[in-house]
Amino acid sequence: MTYLKFGIAVLLFGAAPFFLASFHISLLTEILILAIFALSLNILVGYTGLVSLGHAAFFGAGAYAAGLIGQHVSAEIITTLLGGVLVSFMLALVVGIFCMKVNGFYFLMLTLAFSQMIYSFIYQSTTWTGGSNGLTGIPTPSLLGLELSNIVWVFYVTAILFLLLYAGISIFVKSPFGRVLVGIKENETRLKSMGYNTKIYRYVAFVISGTLGGLSGVLFTYFNGFIAPTNVYWTMSGTVLIMVLIGGAGTMIGPVLGAALIVILETVIATYTDMWMLLLGVIFIFFVIFLPEGIYGVWQRSTRKWLKGKIPQPELKKVDREKVS
Amino acid sequence: MSTRSILEVNHINKRFGGLEILKDISFQVQPGERIGIIGPNGAGKTTFFNLLTGDLTPSQGTITYQGKDVTDEPNYQRTRRGIVRTFQKNNLLDNLTVLDNLLLVLQRKHGLKNTWFRVRNEKNYEALYEEAEELLETWGLYPVSNKIVKNLSYGEQRQIEIMLGIATDPEILLLDEPTAGMSQTETDEIVRLLDDLPKDLTIMIVEHDLDVIFGLAERILVLHEGYIMNDDTPETIRHDARVNDIYMGKKGVS
Image 1: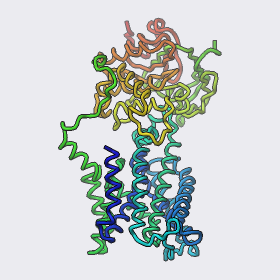
Image 2 (image 1 turned 180 degrees about the vertical axis):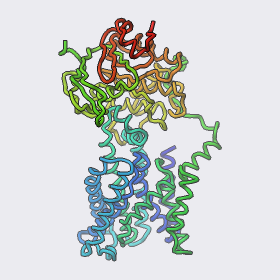
Image 3 (image 1 turned 90 degrees about the vertical axis):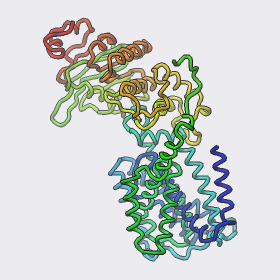
Image 4 (image 1 turned 135 degrees about the vertical axis):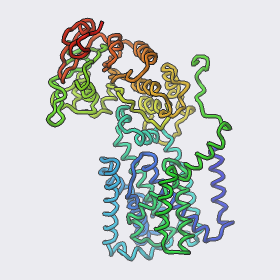
């Protein structure tokens, strides 16, 4: 069943450029990039229970690193991708050391503080990053010497990485390690008395989350060809957090739906009015008050009600039934 | 004698600000002993447990476990050494299933906690699931193993609490009021299960239900205002005039 779904997704993404106009492909690419970004944050927020308001730092670190490497070293995707991911990985290693020491509100404030530090660093290093003008003149990415000048190629690169990451993270959160993270979210005290050194687990979750956030930043440079400091600003962290929460934190598909909803709404609404942020606020308030479990949570709840009695509940089967009763 | 003891507590003191909760507590536990700890509310019983498990560190004094000084070790480290506790208030992973709660305990023992890229299911981890099923059966929780913990009755949650402790493979098990808030039938069931535990398992138990304590323990510590007032056999404690005065009221127990 899982393989089937995955296969269908591969086929759909593979066939998409043949059916969709390039505007829609571009929209889809943006959705997938931000979906990866939201998925990476979801490891922290949804599975480990650590709400970060500084995730844009990793997005920005990956994006700027990829852009600079593209300008100064090589525009080869393999180089920029590895370089960008490595930079955000190292950043997460350092920032994580401080952030794993605290919980809850303090974690939120600390991640915010770090991301704003990264922001001002980027904003003020005008010679390298272009400061408030943003990083311009990033060469078109190329794969093995072939220039990815068409959006379709960028889309394929993004889609492949998205599918791999989606599958990888799905397995990861269902693995024994992933269950420990869910346990930390649920009740860290208990996990400690079970014998888990929970700090290390939180640290690892933080580093994975930050590294993958950087990856989405790298993809964003390919897609956009330009990076503005606002991509590192805390509003970006806020937006991705909203994507996770609106879509459904702690589920796999939730953040993807959240990213899709936000990107589509923004694209549609921006053609009529400039007050996109105002509307985003309204949407967020609506979800928090009326649908706190997010889009996917609502869907799950309604289908469960609808299917009640039709789907057998999962059960342990191995033990001899006679012995039990 | 002292070289053979599994746990040694030396002159322990615990202060919260100016308030001295535990005053100069010393005693030893021999392997396989069943020790009951009684005392009126506020005598420091739970604080004492928290010091043994590492949830708190003592203000003074040392704790030695199997010849090793563990006074400054964090709680998860002590759990790995075999000092395992259950909680007075149910302290479970409320939004997960009973099975998930149990598997989290077992997977660490099975050395799987750092497995990242292998989905956890029956097929991949057979030994793990078998042990889980066995425990669930023993504790009568098999029929609810796929239920979310917070939807279960208080008594069932209490049973899970104790089952998790035992699943952790303790060498010394600290039970903090295991039967608190349970009905008589449920209490009897818990007592029976505790009685069935292997005899070489060391147990320390804090309990308000004196029948449970006198039934299980072969040695009783009476805590009173932060001191160990008595340390004796159940029989002696039962007839001690001071204990009767302080703890059980003037009437005493028969």
